[in-house]
Image 1: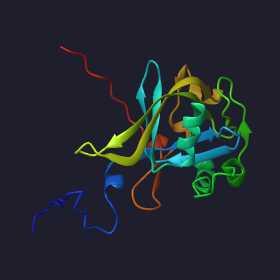
Image 2: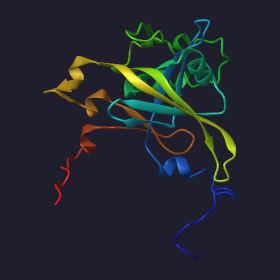
Image 3: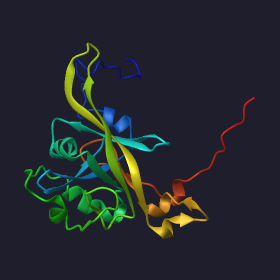
Image 4: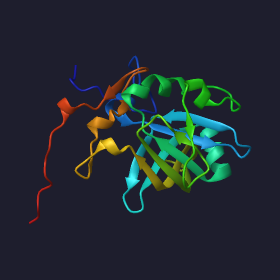
Length: 207
């Protein structure tokens, strides 16, 4: 028997749990607050999220199936990304409940909606970092044959960024001090970034 497990995703992985999420991990959490056209608030974590560009700063999250966050961004053109941290892990998890659109996840999670400066969507007051974002693109993903799949990549430009001042040390943002949590594999695995796991490398010059 080979020491390599090979599979074709279209056929099936043959394991107890899909390994894809565990391999591409840990993944940043897109803890996204949005607001419906009628003013109803929504807060939900997305495990497919990342930063895609520096100038202008572009962040994005992917909605698998049409969910409230996607509908709200389509309606208003705005969202806020909130940093999910170890102290806020339980609240973040509560906000992931598949509640109906009329349920306010801020209240469900025991969090405070704090007014943003440049967008109408509130941020999570308790988080140390938040990005106020304006929609730039919504891209429906396709498979290798060009067919539409039920996944939408929502991209937005961060037009305003909030950082708690104690996380800035000598002009540098202290990643570990922010205590970010990241999504791991399996149904319940998360990871934290800690000082003990920090190491440094300088980018080599060329030639």
